Length: 167
View 1 (cartoon, one colour):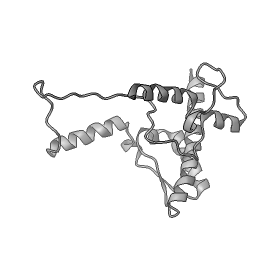
View 2 (view 1 turned 180 degrees about the horizontal axis):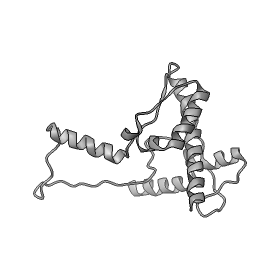
View 3 (view 1 turned 60 degrees about the vertical axis):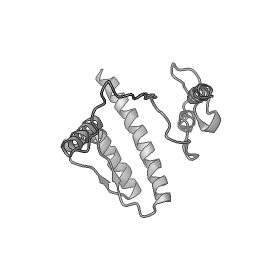
């Protein structure tokens, strides 16, 4: 079990470092005076993440800035604390009553895109190809590759369903 956990952490950290190095490059294009990289929240409490981020930042010539580990808690805790402070300060909205005629609906989608895919980004299949590994979808089969607007095939199919539902 420890081997499985260690293998998962290694791959997760490699992925995080790859994305961080790419983000540093993009950030420097947008803001050449970039002065540091900040890591916070629960992820910054992980010692190996901090170590690897520190190495990536050193390669980029930037300092890594992290709060003390005791302050690197899960984001859910930070959101709850913010809510509590807003309540104490009188900034919270009153709770809804059953008599309020309000229709509430929130659709939750994991990996919901917040905008179009950046043309500089790559799909999982492209990243695996660059590493010399065959593209795999969930279940180990070959990936169909990117489709419209660079979305992976599964995301494109979901997007098509959304567009059909919207029309």
